[in-house]
Image 1 (cartoon, rainbow, N blue to C red):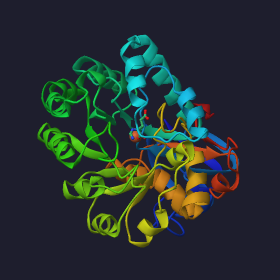
Image 2: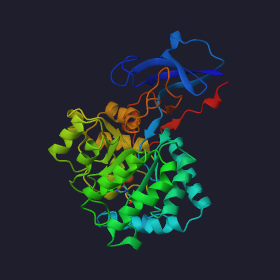
Image 3: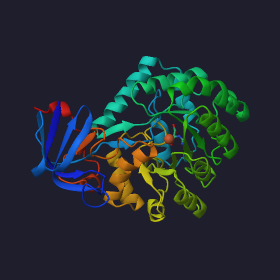
Length: 389
Ligand code: NIG
Ligand code: FE
């Protein structure tokens, strides 16, 4: 069953061979999809016939957002911590322990309901691919449980046992790293595509370069791809370690020295920026311009989590990237779609053309520019192809 999507005032393909500029823009466009894949894109005037039709009435269509960094399996919330932060308290990751407690005591049903609600919230705002990390269980059984639940909603699951040292291992970081690299990894690897580590020597709760290297090496030996939380709170080794080990992405990149930018520019690791975190922790934003000007591939993601940033909104992230990080509206839209796909090493999402998945987002607006131009307005949604007639 093929479906012709028409009435597209502006189509973002992210394929410069299909349209104008880096976003590959096609005005007055149409898209044909069949069996979950795109089979044709081009000007509406040249569109082929299809079994069904869906007219989007002069709206812009873009690839669904690829949110390549989220922590959605958790219990409780940390609204009180957020309020304290807005009165001047700094974020150092210490609150993660309270979410660990709430997550361990939640039932599978409670965790599944929260996870499902957040994924639905994302989808309603145009996100069609989401990565989901563990990292609030921090025991063998609780981490494996988090990943089993995450697998129910996405193929992009990430083992983050090395999020922080849990309270029962306080003062025994080496023992905890051994647990993460041994029995915990063995229990989690079957449910994960990726491994991640919070490499942040400046935080008393996270991991230094040696521990991070050990975790990533063990994950790689177990067949997992590598991701790193790095340089969020201070300059440090995270970015260079990620590039050296060939990680798909290093995320946050808030505090960088020239050597970090040079390493990223010379490597294959995507720099994923999470400006919702700086917004929600009242911190200085990363310098996206510096990275883009150096030729680094930049992705944007939400980091949706109960502590440092509890938003599920890629449109908000796009608006912050433009307003606060020096990105153009076109760069931000690319980074939230094509950039996220690059960070997850996915060739089938983040663009629209023959062979891409039929993951379409539609805007309540005629152009992608409105995403940053109309902040806070619910413009984006995932296009529901079942509405075709
Ligand atoms: O990406 N930085 C480490 N982890 C999360 C925050 C987790 C939390 O505070 O609960 C982050 O910001
Ligand atoms: Fe994170």
